[in-house]
Length: 512
Image 1: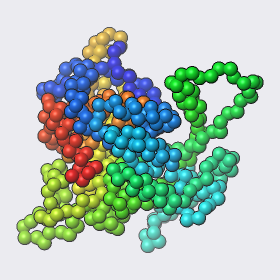
Image 2: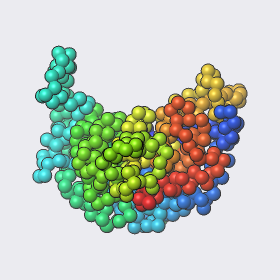
Image 3: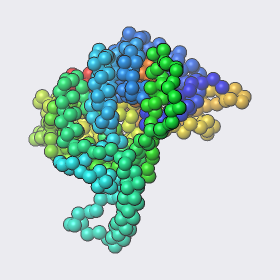
C-alpha cells in the first residue's frame, strides 16, 4: 500500500515511531462536501518556494537535532530551507546556549527563543539560597497532582471531608515512596539552581538578542520525571590503531556517544512548582515586552487561572486592551466588542472604545490539544493577544489511526486498502485528530500560525510545514459545521492563506 511515513512524537520531540498515513489526501474542490483522490505532494508542492519563504516556523527545536552536539550542521540545514525563518525554542538549561550558538551561526534565518520548558523545571529551586538537593526533589515531585485544599471560609460537605482525608493519607504514603526513590537515585540528581539566577541569565540573553522571544515555557501534567543514567564504563585492552578520517563518520560517533539512556520514574513535577516558574518567566516577558511561545498539556484550567491572575496584576500591559467600559448611550459594551474579536469579526488594527490600545504581550499557544470551550475562554480572556500555532505532529499524534467507518456518509478523501485496493471513504476527522480539526476550524483566521515542532534533522522542516499548511487550508475551506467559524480564505488560492499567516506572524512577533 502506497503512502507517507510520518514520524509521530510520543513523549516529546526526541521519541518517534513510524506511522503509515495513506497518500491519497484531501482535494481542494470540496464540491458538496466530497473530494477526489490526490497524492499529497502534488498539492503541497504547488506552494511556490519564493512565496513559502514569506512564512515562519513559529515553533521548532533544531537545537536538539543530532543530539544537540552539531550546531554547525544544524545551521547549514536551516540555511537551505525554503521557509523564510524558524523560531527556535530553548527547553532545558543546557539548550539556552545551543539556541544562542545557532542564531549566531545563522542570524538571517533563526529567531531565538529563551525560556525553561516545564519538563525541566525540576532543575529550579524557588528558594533564594542554595538548597539540599535531597529536600528539593522530595518537595517538588508528586505521584499525582491532588486538588487544592479549599479555603477555611468554605465549609466542605461530609463527603468532601472524607475525600480530603483520603487524599491526605494517600499523599503521605506517596511522599514516603518518593523519599525512598530520591534516596536511591540521589547521586544521579543534578543540583538545582535558584530561580533568580536562571531569570538573570534569561534576561541577559533576551537583552543580548533584541529579536528574541520567550519560549518554550508552560505547564505539563502528563510528563513523567526522568533522569540521565550514568555512562557505562568499558575496559580498554590497548590503544586503538584506527583513527577517524572522515568528518561525517566522526560526527556520527559523537552522536552515538551523546545518546544518553534515561531512568524513568513514576513521579511528576508538581503543578504548583511549574506554575511558579512559569509565572516568573511570563512576568519577565511582560517587563521587557517580548512575545511568548507557550506549552500546555493537560493543564488548561491551571493556565487560564494563571492568566486571570496576571490580568489582575498587570492589566493592559499584559492584555493589550483598554479595560474601562463604555458609559452606555447605545454603544456596544466591551463584552460585545470582545465577542466580536472572538468571532473573528474585528481585526487587531481596530480600536476598542475609539481609543489607541496598549499593544500588550502576544502569547502563542503552541500545538494546542484543547477543547473548543478552552479555546474560546482563552480568546475571551486575551482577545487581542492570544494566537494558536498548529503542527502536523499534533494533528496526526492524536488521530484515531484506524480505517474509517462505513457509517460516515460525508467523505473528504478516498484511499485503497492494502489487500483489495478497493476504495473506502474517510472523514477528515478520521485521517487527523478530530479535536485538532475542530480547533483549527474554530480558531479565528487572524490568530492562526503554523509550526513544525520538529527536533530532528532540520531538513525535514519544510515538508512538515507544507503538510500543516495544506491541512489548515482544507479545514478552513470546508463547511464549518456546528463547531466551526466562518473563514474568508479561498481554498483554490495558496497565496491568500500565505498572506494571512504572514500577516498573523508579523502581528504576533513584531506587533504590527
